[in-house]
Image 1 (cartoon, rainbow, N blue to C red):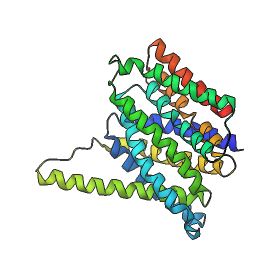
Image 2: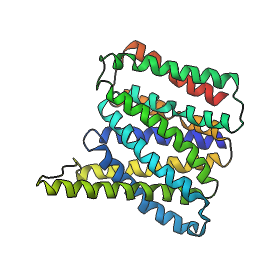
Image 3: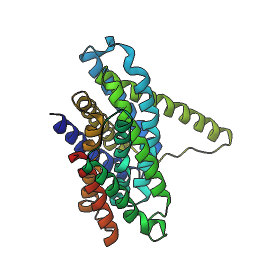
Image 4: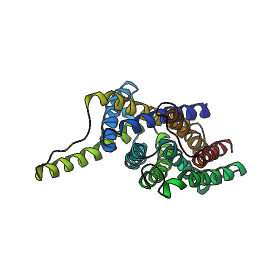
Amino acid sequence: MTAVLAMLASLVWGTSDFMGGVVSRRVRPLIVVAVAHLVAVLTLVVVAAATNSFGAGLGYLPWAAAAGVVGLVSLVAFYGALSTGTMGIVAPIAGTGAIVPVLYGLMSGESPSGLQIAGIAAAVGGVVLASGPELAGGGVGGTRPLMLALVAAVGFGTVFVLIDKAAAHNVVMTLLAMRVTSVSIVSLLGLGYLVKRRRFGRAAPSGLRWRDVPVIALVGWTDAGANGLYGLATRKGLVSVTAVLASLYPAVTVLLARFIEGERMRRIQDLGVGLAMCGVVLLAAG
């Protein structure tokens, strides 16, 4: 059951990331995250009330709040990378964040198998191959999307560990606390931004249109749903295994980008993406 939940989380995350990346080409990534998380908060309040979760102990709170902060930075960086770079490259790089929970497992006393060691090596090698042409200046967007993807990778991997800690207490309240934290931060940033713009007599364009709201709402629902599926999976299995299985989401994003957006990459980049994904699979198999 753990593997099924983690794989479902991966499928939902991959779809959410694709939609978030596409809409971030029209709307500022921070606005996308803000609206998506606000929709998630409103929905999760209803879910928490329906499941009588508000009475849960507060052991989840510090971990969930930290996950909300790190997750916010990671998502903004990731959507920024997806909107300016090649999805088929950015997504696998972000997916290598699975290394973080594996290392956490090692420090917690878990012993890696030979397959896991091979998986880490394959994932790192795949990132080098996939990002090589971009670093050399021959790819779309230059090096900025790659740097943002690496920030997202470290952040996502950290969030995996934090959700594992928080979900051990209560999954629904973990999700709600994460989103309340991120929405609060974005609201403060947005208020400061508006005050600054008005002070200098300039408008504050966001790129947001009503036609984008349904898509962004789906991004919020699917992202929260994937977090919930992953949280449930961690309650039943080791974080070093469930996190890596959940990290297969880049494959979904890559396939959607290939067949819907018609993205094309160089052969060496295809090889790198494939190697990185093989690394994730080896980590899961180990």
